[in-house]
Amino acid sequence: MRTSSLRWVLITVTAALLVSTTPAIAQDHGSGGDHGSGGGGGCGDVFGDLIHILRDDITGQPILAQRWVELPAEVQGYGWGYCVIAVDEEGEELRFTDLSCDVHEDDLEKVVEVNYFGRLNGGRTKPRNNRMHFDEVISNIKAGMSVKRGPAGRLMIGHDCNKVGGSYCAEWSTVDSPMENMGLYVKLMKSGHLATDPYEIDIWAHGDPKQGTQFHPALGEEDWPKFHNTVQHMLPNEQNQVLDSEDCWDYSSAEWFDDKNDNDIWDPAEPFFDIDGNGDRDEHEPFNDLDDDEEWDPAEPFIDDNDNGVRDEFTFECEDREELSNRDFVSVAAFLGAAASKTGKVTWDLTQYYNRILKITKSNEYTGLPPLKTLPALVRSCVIEDGWAGDPDAEDQVEPPYTKECEIKPANKEFENYDLFTDLKERFVNFEGLDDYEREGEEIAAIKSTSVDEWVLAGDVSLSEFVVLVNGAEFETENIAGFVNAARDFLRKIEFVHNYDPPVDLYCTYNTSACGAY
Image 1 (cartoon, rainbow, N blue to C red):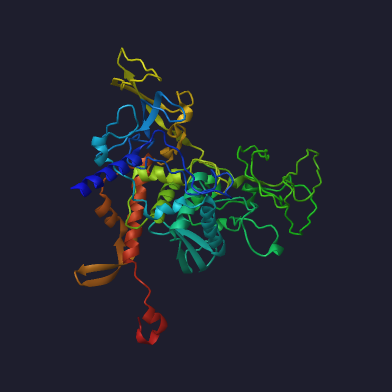
Image 2 (cartoon, rainbow, N blue to C red; image 1 turned 135 degrees about the vertical axis):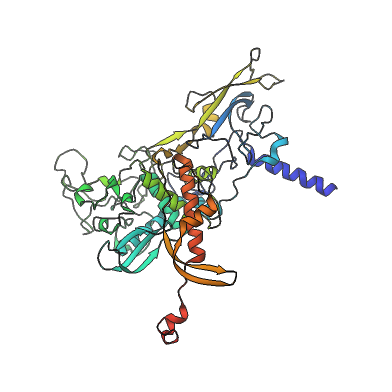
């Protein structure tokens, strides 16, 4: 009996720690080399509220309750705080502990933890690792001849094709790696396309010093024709046709320079992270001090033709961020499904927490600027009955008599104690660009059962039938609900393909005479 009681105490304390948000403090575990990524730990912003919470039913923004609570220890006293509202499996709100953001002890057993990330926990790695996996996909695209979307939504790269961008290729490889799909998810979600600056220096590259400056792999004009119409929306400028190089590069303003390393490229010696986006390195912005002189130096002197004191280079217009379209969001949902565990699940809470961990709405040296459209948290402020007056320093604090007359408004700096509550400052992806998710009726070749112990190879198995069987026929098609439903569908399609895709017959591959005409 004593052991059972002790176990219950430990469970209760653990649950209380999980849901405590007074206030939530961002954690970046570790330290070192990732300038501009919040200390460089790379685990992502991990808050103490990874539970199901009350969210706006269109946008998925959290709705915080404005409550009179005990303030952080370093502040002392009581004041207005902003608390995530825990909900149960049915979405019903759970009660708060008086004068606190904690869930009431009688409701702790109803808390739903978001403990089903599975492979998506890989997002807690360092941002530069995410960029490394994205670079790998770009390198593979550049080595291939064709790019299209597979029946389960994943990218497929064709090799030895009849022509660049051709539909017939001797070999197709699927971007199946969860980490590579995670890299694609981050890039497309942030930028609305997959293009990067071809002269972005890879400051973490290793190899032969004689190679000189090394750059991240980037799509070029020779790669645009490779994209099939199912994936052309992933190219910059929302083009549904092959882009002309003039749409991306403008060399007209480039000025002559002293090409010391004979690579025909003007290389900045020490790249920096332009945190404030003003185009200049400010004193507070980190850089890679290659010559150890503690100064940011231009690599090579140039001839200042227009006498403006700055070397003018070509402009790379295709790197600019774009607002995500319906097709972009559907593709991002497919990348999420491909990055997740094949037997996992996707929810509103998982999606928003995943974006937080991946720093989608934050600037990062390796994964770029946030999306053009983001949203703040929402705050629910309720009217207090007459006769109550809050005294921050009173010894005997009393829970305010909140009424059901409430107003919900976006968080902003005008809220009292704004700087004390991290949840007030967080931004969230705006999913309004997804306005019409439609299921597609793909058919694939698959191993299909005809009885308990008999299987046949069928060439016309419908993925949509399986998706309807698992996820249901009715589903919402817009905003975050549409996004989550799309991700759920792609996840189930990938699970089906993983389990029923016909394997390569190794016996026939290595002993063709044994298979005859087969």
